Image (cartoon, rainbow, N blue to C red):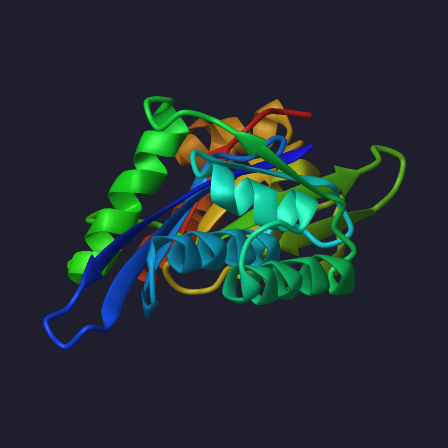
Length: 246
């Protein structure tokens, strides 16, 4: 189950219009929490809150169940039960239409603001409303899944981003100085976009150890290739984080 924690911040301007900010913490199984935020023009705080829900639906993995948590009972009633005025009702229908388009089974729930992820969403929303942004916010992430069978000379490498999925079938060289599992990991790194954080699942212990400490490779040629790959990744701002080993 995927979980999103959303909150909003709103301020009325002297001319009677309003500016708002929304914040979102998205948690998916096997991945680090992702944080998102944005600023918008909004007539009231509830409208900004519903925008946060809409963004959660847009950013969550398609075709999977999603639980969205908020501390706003009016938003829960509008989305889950169709209650509220005309304006809230229109925004809630937009949320449900988007969920239907993306194949999400959407569930709304209440969580108090004092909870860790809700408090983070609240701070993100406040920063966005002020136009300052949140320092260190990182939304450029990709989930990486490496599937390799020892008996085969091919690995399947998949990168899943918020808006796309990239899959590559990598031919492994059994005569290379670099172990096959490390070859698959290097292929995944080459698919990364500049500034992206790769959240790697099912990398072998050997591949993880060699990426973190290339000098552990037994052969100089393997060390050179691993050091070169790391330098290229660092030059383009690519980071590799391991969520588990295969």
